[in-house]
Structures are given as structure tokens and as C-alpha cells.
Image (cartoon, rainbow over all chains, first blue to last red; front, side):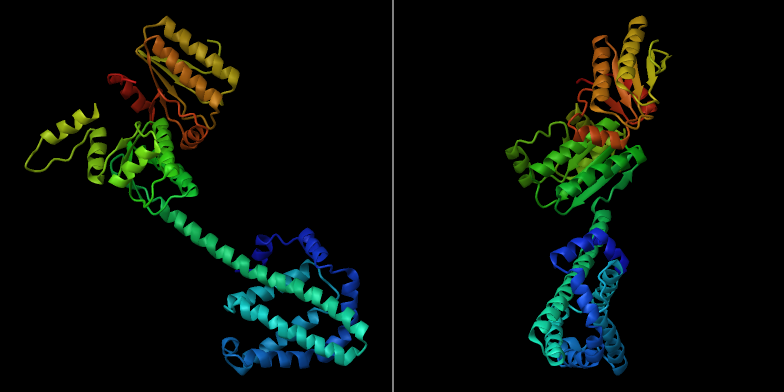
Length: 319
Length: 121
């Protein structure tokens, strides 16, 4: 996932950066103070990065991200750039984008937030120690540290956001996949469609079922659609109401809906809830639904032994 | 004829194909035209084809349904044909399912439905 996409997902624009900076009380004065600390940063960066990696390489969970010497050398170089980046005296969109890129890289390799954010603690301690050593003057140290802290916290929040954005993105992709699988409309026979509903139905999915059913009926110019709800664990008022709505809409197109898979439990629920489903054809078994559908298009299933009574029986049921 | 929607006579069936967006006044004129045409000749059925309609609001839906009911009073069955899926979904979500109006998928089906014995509502 590209960090530029996260910029969009997180709605990071000029205004957003400005509002975050205001909340962190990260003023231009802080930034110029940081810029003034640049010589200090350049002097201590190597020592800080070395100590920082002692922590990371000293723990099994974090060490595994640095499999060889080359990797360690590379990340130390990146870390130096990151550290010096705090002392550029800038906190604009380009800075945010750069920080987001770093966060994305960490998220991508699968480093969990507890280590990523936890490592900042060491970072702050190292910076604090070096500030005391270099500046000596207590007031100066306090001001410098406050400015650094603001920008570092600003970074920490961006990093957290990156992880969240990645998760939201993953969830959205999964939802899209589920959506595609959730309304499988099958053509059973000439002008007869079947929609086997499996799994729970929330209002979002119910709407989708309706839209998709209507689209497919219209496309196939289907005479009827069988909706089988045997695989739906809970049929509540909302689900029942939506099935009634779907039936009404299908009727407006000029087709009919047959509801099958109604178990004893569901029948009880529907009656107890007082949902009026008198306008719908309802049957307990899918096989019966298919027979009824066939009779609507003027066809019937006959056993080879010829049992003509079956079709007649169905007709008497309908009128 | 007062409205812009052509109403054709095909045998004993009156056929109205709505191709333009129905504004309120057009819908009213259409209703008037249909009823006058029914008054003139001995008609067996009325088919309203709305496959060319991209949007229908509840007012227009009500005018169409009312036209069907009025025709029924004059002894003529009405079939509404070719409603688009989006329109059906919208009408039902707005709580207007046009109960009592006979529907069919397309013109051919609509004519076939009129040939059959009208169903009891």
C-alpha cells in the first residue's frame, strides 16, 4: 500500500496538518529552535542511533527484523536521516508525507505497534541524555526538549494513523470481497433465478440483496426469483421487512418472488413479529419452490413413470 | 390530444409509451388523454410502457397508479410494463409499492397478460 494513498485515507492536507500542529502547540518558534539545534543533532546522531539499535538488537522480537549486517547498516543510515529530519525546522505536507512513508515501511514489514511506538521511549531518553550533556544549562535543555517532544509526538500520531489506515484499508478490501460473494444469483432455468442467502443479513447487505435481485431480474427478464433463506441463521423484523420490500419491488418489474427455506423457527418468528408476508409465495423446501417457479412459466417436473396429478395439485394450490 | 405523449390504438388495446421525463403537468395531461381515449372506443386493455423512464417520483407513480384505477372503473385492465430496477427500488424504499397495479417485464408480456383472464385483485 502506497503512503500517498494513506495521505488521502487520513485526509492529510494543509488544513489537517495545521490543525494537528495547533493541537500539539507546535509553533514556528519551536521549529526555528529545532533548526538552531541542527549542529547539536549532527554531533550526536551517530551515538544516538548506535544506542538505539542496541535496544532493538537486544530483543528477540525486534532483532528478527534485522537478519544481517547489511540490513542493520541500511536501517542505521535511514535512522540517521530520520533523526536529522527532526531538526530541519520544517513541518509541512512534505514532512508529513516523509513521516508517513516511514510508518508505511514499518507497517509493511509487519513490525507491530507495541515495538514501533515502544522504541520511541528509548529515543526520547537518549535525546534527553545528550541534551543535558551538550547544553548543560537547565532552561535551555527544557525548552529544547519540549520542542523536540512536540515534533516527536506529532510523528508518533502519524505512525499510529498509518497502522490504522492500513487496517481500515484491509477491512474495506475484505468487505468488497464479501459483497461480491454475498448475493450469488443463479439462473436455474429459463427465466427462473435463484438466490440462496447464506449468513446473517444486516441492513447494508439487505439493501444490496434488493438492488442485485432487481438488476438480475431485469437483465435476465426473469419471470420469477426464488429466494432461499435456509442458510440465514436469524430472521428478525428487519430481515423480514426487507424481504417484503424486495418482493414488492420485484413485482413492480413484473416478476414474482418465491421465498423458500422457511423453517419452523422462522415461521414462528415471522408470525410472532406480525410481519405481513401474505403477498409472498412462501414454501418450506427449495424443491417445492422450484416446482412452483416452473409452473409459473408453464412448465413442470414429471417423473418418467408419469404422475400427472402433481401438476394439477400445484395448480389448485395457486388459485 | 393535449399532452406530448403519444397514445396508440393497437386492436382493442391502448398503448402508451412514455419516453420523456414526466413532469407533473405532463403526467396530468397524459392521464387526461388516456381517459378520453378510453371513453371514445371500446377498449379491452391499457398498456403503459415506462421502459424509457429514468426517474419516477412518488407523484408521477401515484398518477400512473391512479390512471390504472380510473381505467379499471371504466372496465379496462391496465398493465404497467418495463419499470427499471433502480426505479422499483426507489419507489419501494419510499414506501410506495403501487399496490393493485398489474405489472409485466416488457411490452410483449404486458399484452400477453391482457389476453389472459384478468386476475382478481
